Length: 196
Image: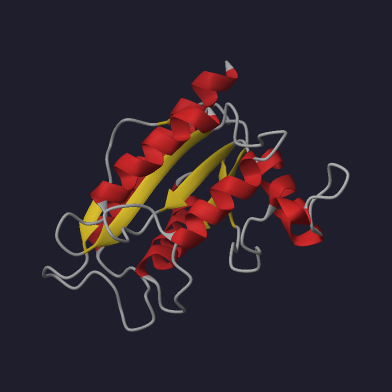
């Protein structure tokens, strides 16, 4: 007799990188997360959302309760997602300007971040982007985002062994396993908040 395995509902994750650099390690983390979901995290579907086309937030661009088309499209992607995965670099002990801009656009009425489960991953030198995570969590309180608490994911990208290749792709297997644990936690937390 074959064992019956429960099929988890599909969770759609919007993934945002706060770094716009072509060979960004943060975007590389998101590519690795997408690959991991295809290989070993069934029920999780990650879509990378490019925030580089968003104009700087300016309420003069809001006309009769509508936003520029690129902003409307971005807001719709966030609204349709079940949860959010932030790859947040640390700039001057805080979140990057592009990420803050995206957060601000999607928070305009109605706030499309509200009640979304979320996770944060960061890399860099020293503390591995940890201070940006603290600020993002503070911002998330106002936005009604619900972050997973564990596992935390900060990564010193410059300590051996090599973590990324020249194109910004994650190559370290131990780090991939850590990233997988974040994805599994986000999946479980999302299902719990959805009551499934």
